Image (cartoon, rainbow over all chains, first blue to last red; front, side):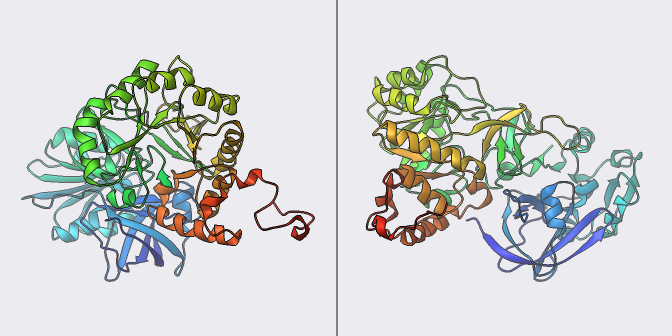
Length: 219
Length: 295
């Protein structure tokens, strides 16, 4: 059953170029780590997919960078502003892992704080393009932080169950080193619930709808 | 009757949304399976969106084996949208649907802007399907046709039972930084609120050109939009892009449609089919009408 509710923003804070938007939770279920929500972007036709970053008591928090008209509109929301939220959606990370290692690249850090809570703060490595972007690493205090030109794959140790989110080249590099990794993908998405077939990625020789079969897929 | 536009809903991933319609229209099925177009497939624009899905589907055999039995379980009437690259392709799909009682109509997608078109005319394709099926055949036409009324008359003469108006328009969006196409296949089908006046015009002229029932669609966002399509001549209305933004749209639009009818002094929105072609609303005399009708 799809659950879409009109909620209120309760605050937002800046973490370098990123915005952490906090929204009143209402009756929305925060869901499983790695699942996502569709957030109405004021003034835009389509909602924007966002994985849950944190679930403070009574709230849902989403991390994003304002890089287009939708995320800019979301970044300008003030406390009390309303927006419709649909979710939780998709399939999240499998938490039944023995030696978890969280790996994030850039805005791919977004689902990791909530995942880290569920896995009791396992080791993590996150990479950013600059120290300004790396301010978001404060959301994952235990993480080893690397900054370009050092890449997360440069410090990836073997023997871990890798759970990763980041740009496609990073996911492909992680998959090459950790063939059993769980990878959280992203793609332009219209609906979030399987209706449009817009959010496919080519995995395993065929197109998979990220909103239904993902966004977390086996490497 | 309220329907979903083909390709804008998957009844198997959102059965409750499908049940909120009077019938479910499938994504287009072709004779052979299709992987669809390379991503990115979606680009929002300022007044609508572009899609380039490319008729991804399991093929008619896979559809009949894996999808239709599950759709039947939902207990809602099914319209199957069919496509192809020749009249024979459409006929093959039409014939394959014979004997499936849950299928109540066939919508012929004659106008997908994201794949190559069949060489035959719409009327020739309708004729080929008419020869192999007794199911109601709805011809989905493109708003890009030079004369959509002429095409409507031609498919009516060829045996179509209805029209679906309109499909998307071909459009292009460029990345704001790189100025390169945002879609993997460069161009895509443009939909959303910007399509409404185009859909209204197509429904309006086809209502005058034929006596066929018309499923009106294109940019319907609220009950007022649906009311206008009905007034232009639509006997049913389909919701498309709005479903991506709001899966509860069918319930909302139904309620708003009743309110829109009431505001126009009508007891039932569906008695207003084609009313825009009349000079005055029923029960309103010209003496009561203002000298200048507001737009």
